[in-house]
Length: 155
Image (cartoon, rainbow, N blue to C red; front, side):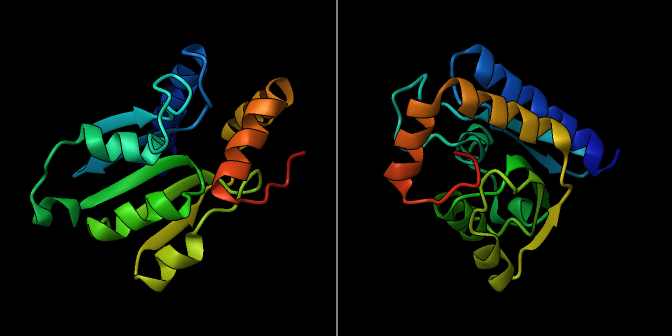
């Protein structure tokens, strides 16, 4: 298994969110070459303020031991926002693999400044999924971006 394999699994989660009427962002948490948790963006579906893909994945992992988080890699289709990056730092997840960061650049520097290894695969599929969603749902996207104060390259 490699980073591209696990990113494909995160993309499956993004597609699941899209099928549910949500924003297509997905994530998986991997320990010792095994997916231990999956999640996807549930902001729209659950009328939630915090269920980003990464947060959903961390929540779905349950209460792991501290030493277990230190052996994981989080795969996410989009660059993590400050909230998700804070959770990654809080739980000492040492490595984050990002599908792409051109549609939205999250808090990658925050992660790096806290000794988290950040790998950007610059994959086309998650970028196209999100670009299409933004094109089809500009009002929803603008509301979400305005809510968290982000700038996006997609208008």
